[in-house]
Amino acid sequence: MKKFLTPTVLFPFVIALVTAVIGQYAIAAIALIAWIGMLALTAMRQTAAVRADDPTEAMDAESRTLFVPIRRLTNEIEELIDRNRDSALMRTVGSEARDEARRIREQVAHALKVRGELKRALRGRSTASQDASELAAKAASAASETERAALESAAEARRLELGHYTTVEDALARIDGGVRQAEAALSEIRARLAVGASGERAAQADQSDDLRETVSRLKALSLSVDEAEQMLRER
Image (cartoon, rainbow, N blue to C red):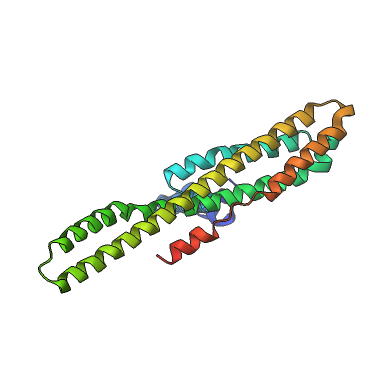
């Protein structure tokens, strides 16, 4: 909202008001049109900035669906910590839990972006499979050894490509498994924070130890997608 109240945006509107008051309606109309244009441009820039900050903009529809619970759980963890900031438990472990939740959210966002690229890479699998079968059939009925050798070589290249698609599927499965682990870990963190926030003071020490153990497991969780990214670069 503040961006709509800057001097640059307001100046045409002020000019329109002043010129209208003194009867210069043509100038007022031009200034008003300029003001409306400035508003539209500012709104477009704000929308572009919001989209640039939103990791789901780089995801496909399926990946965005997978990201929804990750973002929701991270937000709920942050809200729990903020709402109970006076709790001894939150003062000792809350900041650490928040940082790890955000780290996992960023890792999942990156992994899901790569996931979408892997899914797009799989689109050529059916064509490669069909081509391999057709080339093998042609090789079997080739008129000469030279033609047969060329066709068999082409068919083998297609079969190697199919092996690449199997590797892509394995990478997709690892990413999906990592996202499920991240969701489970964040859900456990949220549950322990909720219990700790509402627990009796006498139980704070035990709850703190349990939460620290859970945070440590979250720290150990890492969604590495280096191999998948290398695979995409080599395609």
